[in-house]
Length: 267
View 1 (spheres, rainbow, N blue to C red):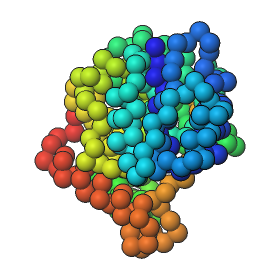
View 2 (view 1 turned 90 degrees about the vertical axis):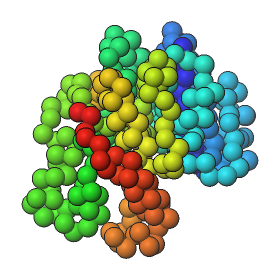
View 3 (view 1 turned 60 degrees about the vertical axis):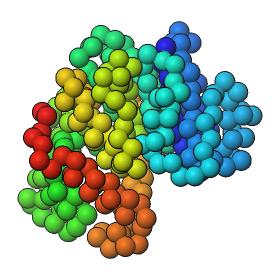
View 4 (view 1 turned 30 degrees about the vertical axis):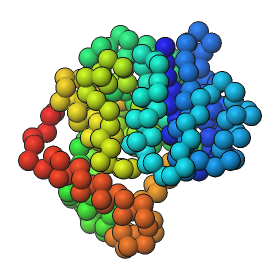
């Protein structure tokens, strides 16, 4: 059985689109359940689920529980042997979910799997990466990223030197769409709830590697993603003072680097 966990935050319109696309995309041959973990739950979102998608389980929370706790709550309430974790801005293509399940079944050494993510114009998004360094954050948030060595570092960070047309080992995968097996999650553990919104998928992937599992980017499965970088605004480093998402990003980055500062890379 597959448990699909959708972590929603105040976006009933995108959630409706996501749930409709899931029901269309998942084959009737696949035994599955859908769980919506609703952070800062509103009546509009609750009505979308209860009135339009009666088979979907809703876990509403009044406060902002964050991405990490939302994922963990979904897994804790799931019955499946596999978990597909999605943001509500994901629209899976037909057969993509079945392909991911079959890949994990046939590759027991793979603990975490991510699809190719597409913009709605068909262009490919960056969704598989090498591990962060402090330089990565500096290059991504300042003018230094436009300099030759900054561009080179960011290309390396985004695995642009790899063949991403086939299944590829990645240090970590974007948390917007992830699939994992229950057996692997039970060994690795849930996401680290000290990381509220960012870096928890980076930390999780690192722990999969540390526990002997591969993390794989799987482009044969494709999903559309309405991607907005909530932590990045128009003013680069000044966003740390202007946007709460940027401050969350910095806080979680500090927590991640503090955790791994003295530890060697697992891969």
